[in-house]
Structures are given as C-alpha cells and as structure tokens.
Image 1 (cartoon, one colour):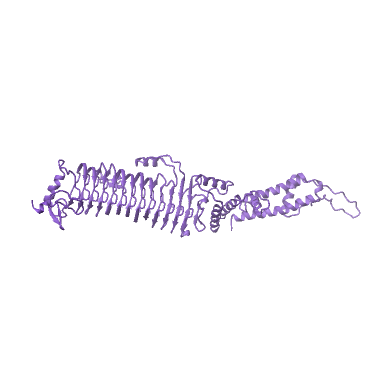
Image 2 (cartoon, rainbow, N blue to C red; image 1 turned 90 degrees about the vertical axis):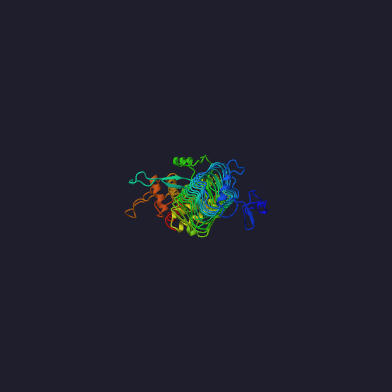
Length: 598
C-alpha cells in the first residue's frame, strides 16, 4: 500500500475522517472523491454517489459534507428514510422539486446555485439549521407535516415560501433574509375557451403555519401577505430594514415585542387575540388600516414615521363569513372575556398619527396614551372617531387635530359616573387631578377650534372632577358651589333656565298664597273732581295666581310693578327677587353665550 493510499479524507469543512478511499489532494489536504472540492471528477463521483443511493450500503442516504460538482437533480425523488445532507456543498443549481422526504437534514449545508424544493413534502423533521443559500431558493407549495427548522439559516438570494404549509413548529430563530416572500401564491389556470371574455382564473395557495418563531431573524424585505398563522407566531427582536408586508394575514396569537420593522404594512390583517408590540420600533410608514384588532399592546413602542389606523376595527365580535374564513385557516375560535385595551403607554411618536373612522365606546374598549410623547402633536389626527375623553389622560392633546371627534354623551348628568365605572372595569385608576387636566386640555382644544358647545361640556366635567375631590360636597360658603348649583359653572343652559324659571314660579307662588291685603298698598280710587269732595276709602288688594305670576315677572325685569309692597316682609321679598332674578338671568345669558362663542 502506497503512502498516498494510506491517506484518509480530511475534508476541510468536516471534523475527523470519513473513511472513504483517498482520491486527490487539494491545498495539501487529502480528499475522497465525494468531498473533493473540484469539478473534474464526474465519473468517479457518480459511481461513489450511486453507492450512497443503494439501500444495501451502510451509508445509505448519507451525503454528509459531499461536494456536488454539477447540477444534481433529485427531482421527484423518494427518500423513504433519513437523508442527511449536513454540511454538503452544492456548487451549482440543485433540484429537489416534488421530492418526498421521510426525514431530512441539511444542517450547515451550502447552496452555491439556485435550490428548488418546490412542492416537496417533508413527512418528518426537516432541519436546515445553519444552512446557507447564496442564491434564490424556492419552497413554494412545499409541505412540512412535522417540524421545519431554519435556525441561523442564511438566505442571501430571494427566498420563495409562497404557499408553503408547515403543520408542525416552524423555527426561523436568528435566520437572515435579503428578500423573502411567505405570502399567497396565485397560479393562473388555463382558459378552456380562448374566446371567453371572463376574467382570468387563478388557483390560490395560502402559506399556512401552526406555530412559528422568527425570533432574532433579520430581513431586508419580507412579505407574509395573506399568510395564515393558526397557532402562535413570534417575531421577538426580529429586524427588517426596508419593507415588511403583513397585509391580509390571519393571526391567532402574534408577538412582535422588541422587533424592528421598516415600512410595516398590516393593512387588512386579522388578529383573533390582542397582538403584542411592546418595545418595538417602527421605521417609515406604519399602516394598520382596515385591520381587525381586539386590543393591542404598543407600550414603549417608538414610531419613527407616520402611523395610520384608518378604519381599524377594535372589536371582538365576528361575522359569520369571518368565522368561516378562520375555520378554513384551522384557527380555533374561543370565547374570550378579555377587555379591548389598546395601550400606547410610554410610546414615542416622532411623526404623525391618524385614527379615522374608529369606534371606541367607553363601555367596550379602552384607548390609553399614558405618558406617551408626541414630537409633532400638530400631525396627530382623530377624524370621525368615537372615543371617551379619558383616553387622553397623562398626555397633552391641546394641539391635536380632533376633527368630528365624538366623546359620547358627555352632556348627561351621569357622564362622570359612567366614565369612572368604565375605567374601573378596565382596571384603570381614575386619578382626580389627571382626569381633570385631561378634560380641561380637551376643552381648550375644542374652544380653539370653535367647538364651543363641546368645550362647555368638557369644562363642566373638569370642574365636576375638581368638586368631587373636595371632602365637603355641600359648601354654602363657597362661591363655586353656588355657581355649580345655579348654572353648572355657567356651562349648563337648561339648569340655568330651570333655576330662573324656579325663581319666577317660587316668588309668584309666595305673592299668591302667602301674601294678604296687608302686604300691598291699597288701590286708590279715581281722582276726585274737586278738592272739597270727601275722600273715598282705598280698596285692599289680594293678587290672583295670574296676577302674582305677572307681578313676579315684572319684579325680575326691574319694572317696579303695581301694587307697591306695604310691609317689611313684602319689601324684603321684592328686594330679593330684584337681586336673584336679574343675576340668574345674566347667568343664563352667559351659559347661552358660551355655547356659541368664546
């Protein structure tokens, strides 16, 4: 045996020897024919490869570290047992389309050319951990009946996962992508009638995942358009630098905490449970328009660009067609009693924010911006939105653009009580000073934009919160208490009018029922014709009900009606009405004025 023949194969990318016969040296290393990194070995290589495809061979389907020189084709190949391509080197294009794998290992494999796994079926675990795809790779319409592992896998070309179906766990931990598409695949169907004027027909294949982890994954561009996640999907600390498309995706449970997304598009996405975005960062435009979100956690999120929630549905109810769609996606629909809470607590908005056409009723949902920071508050827009005013506690909304924003029935006598009950229902503490400040700042916003009636209602609620914080609810010596009682701090027209009407009726009743002839100066007879005629006795006066009301109205109008009061009691009552009536009329006029002007 020669020295050369005694040499074993010591492949550079494998540990230890492979115990295959020596073939040739490369860079002073001995290699067998399977591992030799050179292209001029076609005949011997094919012979050695054929042995690995022989079921009687002890190395059956063992391709660990094999260096494939040309474009190997395993098209429609059946691998009935474990096939191991770990650390293999595919120097050029490789074909695995429509192949059947019992269990496959491509751990640390390198693909120098295009790799095609289109419509491949992996019955057992498919492990591509640490693999490197230097050019495009296609798993389009591939099916993983078990687990698909892509831990630390590098996709340096276009990664096509359109229409893929992974029934087990899909692990993409710390995988890196340049351009990836996990979205829907649409295949044009042949037209049976070339003269048909109908629209082209397509066959649709949605990407389907049960549980998937993209934790720490990096993307330059990625698309999950119309994908379906029937279990839990995680994007912890994942990064996309150019574009992230999650439009029309069905999520069961989604977690994006700590992720970084550029140009994130969730337009039309459907979340069955509340997604988590805590401490994430969004760069460029972030779109959640027309999405269905039953609550969300955006706490401590930084939005570097504008954010759009136009027509976003914050609700839990499902329509029948939505239930059918979710069932087709294998998403189990469970009755959840969790409240609808949308939190932006301690978040930072460096550009604009738009809420448009949203319905956020205080008895069903809670929108919170506690300690959120807006660098450009003039670019914050709430257009045609129904929401409670306490959504803006701990934030300054004075410069926000509140266009056709509806605050619910804030003019109801029980508005403040209902707001407190709603906050308690959602586990929020209604701090008096903070709530009062929120009402006052919204009132300033409304008044600055000529919404005087709305401003009046908000100011009233602010002063009601302040009154509720005092230990003494009835304080006869406090002027503000009387101001509240008589006119609702000058903001309640109906109350001011009611008090004025009560003053009129009360004094009229007193003049009618309590007054007798001694209260009024008697009515004098007609002027006598001559000074020599005898004086005629004066006629005592008793006011009727109608006369009493007219008399009371005259006193309030400062008209000094007849008859004049005759005793101290009558004079005191007339004096009191002369004061209270005009003062209350002035308060009413002020309340009316504040409804229409500053």
